[in-house]
Amino acid sequence: MMIFTVISWILAVLVIAPAIYAVESKDLLSAAIAAGFADLAAAILFLVLQAPDVAITQAAIGAGITLAVFVYAIRRTERWEK
Amino acid sequence: MNYYYLGIVILLAIGTILALYRLLRGPTAADRMVALDAITNVTAGMIIFIALLSGRFIYVDVTLVFAILSFVGLIIVARYLEGGI
Image: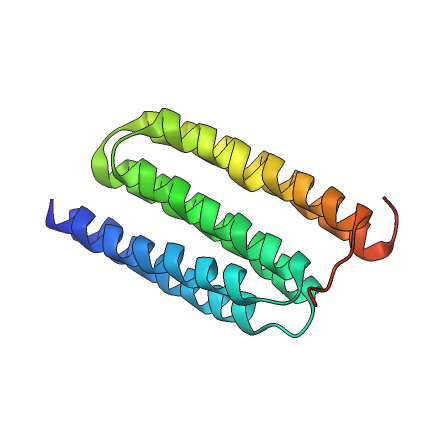
């Protein structure tokens, strides 16, 4: 179990860093890409925590559908936050 | 053999962190999208070694979803940067 503790700590860092960037960024497209990466790392974290079905759903919804919906929304509105 | 797989997982995690640096500091959005695609491919390999490490081979199915949906996201963002959609 020590092995999976180490992997979980690395994945926790990989979730936190792009999430902070997605909040602070002024470029909304870059923020959407960073949020997609945070979802991806969260999916791997679910996998390490022995929930592969939740990981499949998180990868499908988070990394695929959410990024597409965000890009269409940025296309309809504007890209740079004032 | 366990430590062999663990070493590979840690090396792939270091590769992910290096690509994360490019994702956070990249000047343009195209750099960030290419970094996200590289991270997805590296983590697909990392998931396979996590499956070998834990002995549960149902984890390999997750890599299929990762590979297909990262391609969809890459295509949509590339079409946006081109001005297509």
